[in-house]
Image (cartoon, rainbow, N blue to C red; front, side, top):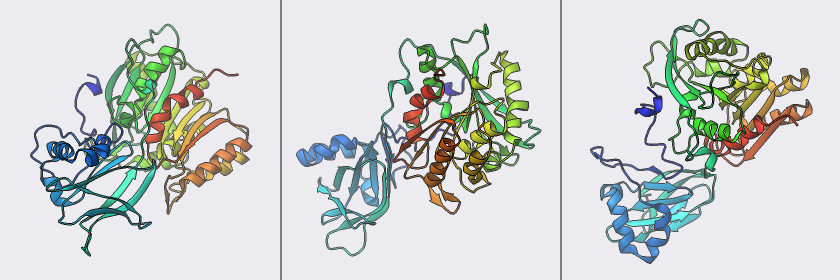
Length: 413
């Protein structure tokens, strides 16, 4: 059965950011129907123009319990709705600057404010009632939103590939681990000639076509293969390993060891175990041209993808990655220097990062990626970096994946 034809434990309602994202507190756990958040964008205009209608819309979604916490908010694209309850006007105050974001409007029994903010911002805030010394509520706000292009959405008339779920728990290279993986076979594959290959780390969440801010990678492949902008490509979406004492759905404890470590262990795991098994089980013919093999991932998965190609450019000739962890978790900070000092390898790289990426004890992600970009340029690699203002994660990459894929798989000029 296809993994996307049944519910999955790892798909959570908290990933509403994209079409409508929401966080709420102190709401009834006994609700039996899916919660529909108030329309923040519509309410920005409706609150001042028609307070009674705005109040009815908010109550229809939240009921009265949300107002008791004084920390309920909804984010729709880059518009934020706050709701609170007090006898005097409530202001939303940004703590790092002291700026008042806005003052709520009394809607009869509670107050509300809807405000469109700049994209790619994050800050702590407080709800303050006039005449009160103590904040009514507080929280953190993080906004990052991009529209999908049509290539990331299912299109009528485009043939869809088959997607099947599997589990691997017999690794010799990473013993005592188990992991799920998904195999995507395009509708156009008929075995008459060898197919290209893509491998995605952290795979299952990137494969799913329904997540609101996910990569939708199988849908992107459907659309770009149908257009002839990507070759007929088999894709393996593979999760990192869980240790034997972990349950399915637990955060994979072996991830950093597999992804952040230097050396050839992970690429051997793919070449000696996973890929031969997939080829045999699905009776596939794959190209033996490394230019037809790509490996992809985000964060530590990006470092893993680069390491795999760096160790075996005779197999993986293409890398697609985002918010790459070229920092010192397990040594991937050495890559900019290695790229400069080592004879150029036949690797094409499509990479992406954001200026608001992580800065912590392991390093500064934007700086590390700038150094990687400079090293690739110095050494004459076939590469491109996409830069935005986004945070650490896959949100920006999800919007840019079709463009990155087209560039990665373009015909040689």
